Length: 338
Ligand code: PEP
Ligand code: MN
Image 1: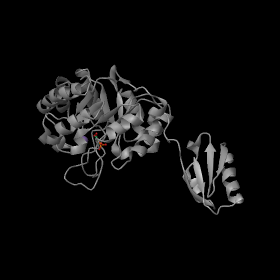
Image 2: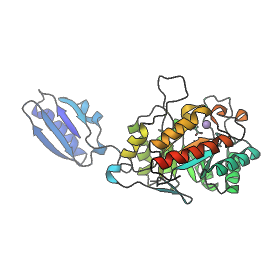
Image 3: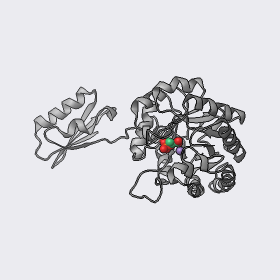
Image 4: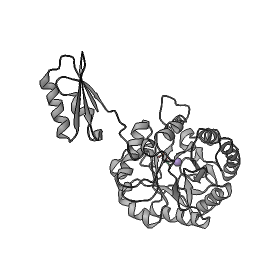
């Protein structure tokens, strides 16, 4: 961290900054220029915050010089990390697709969705048992019964499962049902207690981007999980909120190459919650794969009109199968396997 002193700052003010840095166990390097003094904090500056210095007398401004995330940073881990989900590699040469309904509804719905996912070529199945809904009066998910239905429908097709955890109190139940990938949804990206809890286990975690989160905040949220020891983290871009109201969210395609540069961890894209309409899903999926996404999370439903949640954005199994054929060509065009 560098602390830039005001031109009129005196020796006592410089000394006070120096003392504060040393009190945190770091060394100090002082550079006296013709106009200003710069104070460098030497050591692990991640424990320091500009807030600690900006309010001190004589300080003009202070700034970090190293990135605040460490474990997730590509800076310290050049090779791509490939996460093994029940034998399926995510983040390797193959673009992997996760498909399934927004929410788990009934056994026949899940059986048909699992069959559609499998036959279309998805390698994992999704389905929400606990749903974060905007209104408390709408369907909130089937809960534990939903986990059971998801588990058995996916098992029948040999697909590992992905489902959202909203409450730390359900973590043991998720482990009991052998959830293969825990999804942290957009609304919980900065639920730090939840992040710390999934950081203590070794299950792969899909960390969705907060709807208004910057890339830096998203990387720091992943760092929370990683700091607890769980490095099996998959980033999922799902669209961000902007001034645009013509579609549900704006798929931030730019985030894909930026994130691939900043982190060694896999990056997948959810085109369904980005566009919010089924007809947009093929174009957004192709864009994501072309931009370097390691996978896709796509909502499908055997009968979208009857879906209990997110009916507008679900693909039918036939539409999904058609899209998968198209995606194979896009993936191969950018040097990926599919
Ligand atoms: C979901 O994937 O079911 C979901 C609720 O997504 P998001 O958290 O991105 O809104
Ligand atoms: Mn949904």
